[in-house]
Length: 398
Image (tube, rainbow, N blue to C red; front, side, top):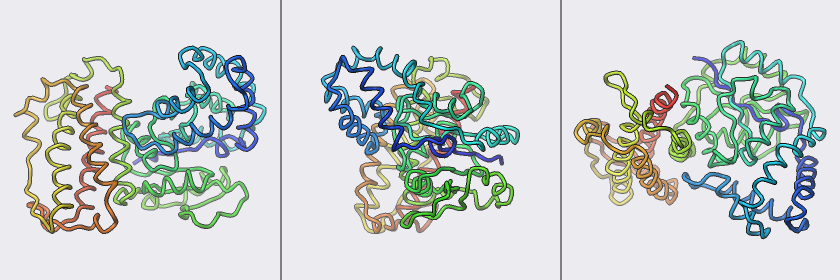
């Protein structure tokens, strides 16, 4: 199976020192909006609103929807009124910040070789900027989005989680159809890139930029300069790049990331995509989300609640596939079913968030599996999610 390569942007593909770039960015934004706000407030308010994005765990609230209520009111700004000025800033002023960055000489050869080898390449930058700002920085790195087939470019308009939350990586993988096989995250930040991806069970390559690896962070599979990446990939085993999604952190991240991605993948799609005919035995998009909703409400959540509530309970088997025809999922409203799935999943996530490590090991007796644990059943839920996000991605993209 071909490699899926997740690439950080700043100080990985583009030399961009945030300690100099952010003050310049805030200064330029403040000057552009000086007629509307108190410049002394901009920096602290921006940092506070950005911190809210890092903390977000809501699967139905984008980072922009998290940021805006903490940014505009605190500056006495009417978001709708200043939106055109902000759009002009990113179109006309933000590009002038290019001089604070420098291309990495290994970036273009890496992307060209990845394309030659037919690897999937996803830009795994932290989605705390608008899409326009991220596309400008890709251009500064010498790899304009319009000239390369990146599978996804995260931004605060379309993503729900920020690094180092492992749910960011789950959402990113879900957005590209959760490819099977080898995956590698490449980045310079031991916390955001290495810890975050490691908690998702993904192998990592640390861009050291001549620095020793700091203590207190998960060890990467390898480290070095960006130009060292391709030779290392040619020498590493497939097993070393095979993700381990059975980690507790990876399971909960998956259960966050997939419904969040489904919301964006289906946003604004026409009815004919929801109802698109499929080959015999395959589900259309409406059937997929209706199935996910009912399994979440009637199987997943009740099972987990029972294991938490009872000592070593018996868990009966359920033929949920039979519901697809019996409940006539193809006649239902797919968009409404997705909203109902999201509501049910939020209950499941609230339950999982309340568990201790010992709770994850609580035993149960399953009609088909025999002796099992809450952890194993949660892992089955995550695997079920991954199977159906692949199907949904195929249906949406034809």
